[in-house]
Amino acid sequence: MNLTQQQKEVLETQHKKERDRRIADRIKAVLLRNEGWSQIQIAQALRVRPETVHDHLSDFEKKQKLKPENGGS
Image (cartoon, rainbow, N blue to C red):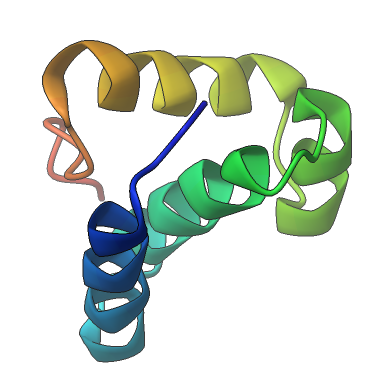
């Protein structure tokens, strides 16, 4: 994943302001992948399944999606 400097700055700012932990984790996954972390390393750091990280990264790459659609519990 190759983010521009502007995209990275926007995501960093959004992460600092984000109150929803799910969205913050998605942002962290994108930023860490951009820094060269593997999906397994990101999954370990965020304490989620590697499949979840894959889905987050895929959603961002295809649709710039960061917000989960399920609404949570």
